[in-house]
Image (cartoon, rainbow, N blue to C red; front, top):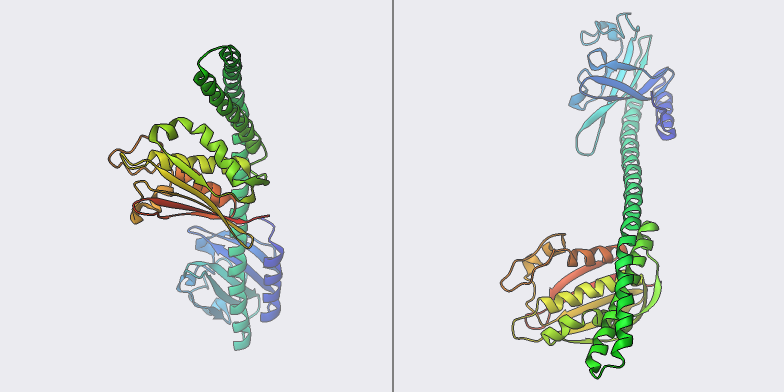
Length: 377
């Protein structure tokens, strides 16, 4: 039998003191078995539900007190009473009822001699039964949390292994691309077409940031997803993101204004968040209407909030919660293809900081995405 927790053992010992009987037990009753999670005055045992005294009538949720079980037709043929396994005479059983009305089992007391309980003793056992239910619920939640943490550690270990495996495959081609870009830049310096050199500079900068991000993601996975808070400038982050999105911004004629804010957060997470939000603002703009995007940051005490506002198609109130779920797309006319992971990723990043993400209406038909980052340290 499993070793009972200290709290359950203390409660069953206290029950023996309250009722003044030599034996008390906390029983869990299943469809076919009764097993004792804690006992006082006896060794715990396992028996079938058919042989259990406590299984008789315990489901009605009422307490049972029997002065002499050998005289009670409900129990006189029970093996714990008729001598086959015991000679119990006094018997008391208090059901363990959860808040939802489910009967888990019983708190019982017994003796080999006939006996009685006073009303005060009976009430004391009923109070203890309620405490036992609470203790069992806490132990169940603790076990569930322990299991969840173990699963999270296992998942993080697999993620780190996966990230380590693919990082080599990603870094090698990126390094090769950057090498060829550098060679092209050297040749383009002698070219009369200065535009080519500008394009190569953009490719080189974006490729280098991608290589840095691959390495950061590997480090992020290896340390189990723990954020690495750093002092950041919102304007600098947005400038980096805009360079990566140069092609799509120019294609749509988009303008992006940013008000600076110094704050503390994980740089990888914030870059991914802003890139997703600005990319969405451009991708889901209205036909023939150039995107206008405002990125702002606000501080209220220790709380930091970032906002990205656009003049695009907007998101209906009905869909604003739904689009935060992974793989959810709206499939509207003229919408570009996508995976439905952008906003879900942003919502997870906000949650990882202890904050949240909210979507509301922007000016006109646009959208405002507000990211609450929680306390700034």
